[in-house]
Length: 154
Image (cartoon, rainbow, N blue to C red; front, side, top):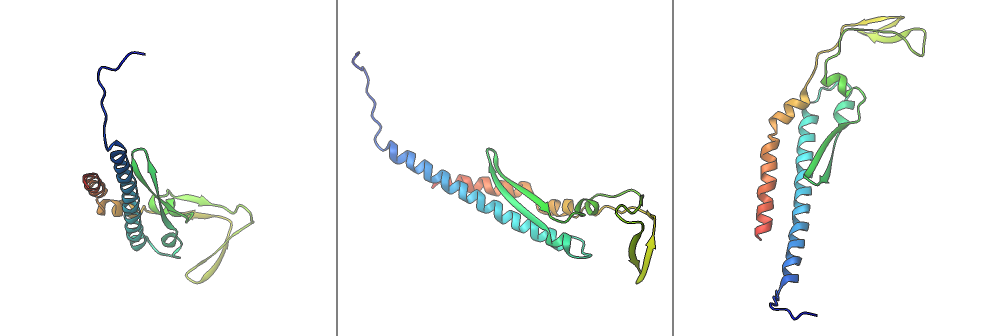
């Protein structure tokens, strides 16, 4: 076996690697907490600005955070089945009964039975886009990256 010409010993390498591991864990937890905080704030604003007829849409707004290889992902969801019909417009359309012979509903306190309804369509209510424009997500992302710099300097 050849004799080494140069031998390099690094004292404290384990300690240094341990500090990097701790900083990485602290950074991950900080990013998660900031993502959760942002999610809570976005959901509060969405719930405050969501249109209310029955309250189902407002109460069904949720968020979920997930760590990805690129950072944190914030997903907004709604459990209300009619959410997309509120956010996006609908064209005029005909409504016919599917599981019954007639449609049954109330208009101005009057009970109505009919075989067909000519629905006029609905206007869009882009309350989600308005809230996301109010909350500057780019600035929020910048705050997260500045915090990461502080953690790695510590």
